Image (cartoon, rainbow, N blue to C red; front, side):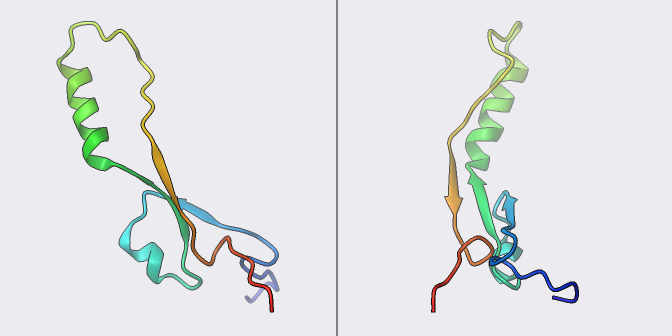
Amino acid sequence: SARGVRVPEDIAIIGFDDIPAAAHATPPLSTIAVDKEALGRRGVELLLEDAPAETEVRLPVHLIARASTLVRTP
């Protein structure tokens, strides 16, 4: 790079949401993918509840490892 920092040798970079552009970045961006349909469904359920029992919602995510976090050995 212009500043002499190498990805992923010197610094690892990870994104969130696995947008299509992540796979086409240089280097391809590792990312965390979330089930957007499940997230939306749970959001609507919470909106429809009179008094939600929980205010924190946790959904599973999936790591998509790409070159921005993988160190290749020669």
